[in-house]
Length: 159
Image (cartoon, rainbow, N blue to C red; front, side, top):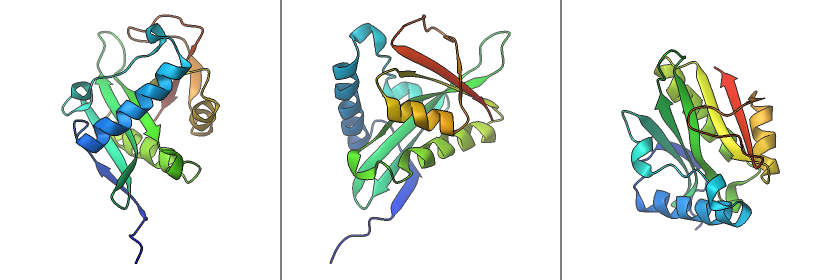
């Protein structure tokens, strides 16, 4: 008998061993694509409540994708959520996994009354760039503590 591979989306502690393993795979990939100064890895603590949220997408017993959002309330600016740590294993790519994770993160922001999502990604990730554009994200300049970087692309979306 085969196990049920119906995708299951659920909140997840970013310190969970499966989440840590997935984030390590993501870091290895990003480190192969970009120099260290162009990688902005958010620690697990920054994605825990009350300052963040983290979700996992399971296929059976395998954590096949994850993503988080970090909440920001800058002085004199609108609150926003920064999408961080979005990563999907090859076995779940092309099946809507990243789109489902993004929807969960955006729903979390809306539930908190935050109407703006932002993110930074890299120029060597055409699938990610295409996903964000299809989801309605528009390019913008650096935000928060980011500096202009020719290897980075910054996006935002009004929710």
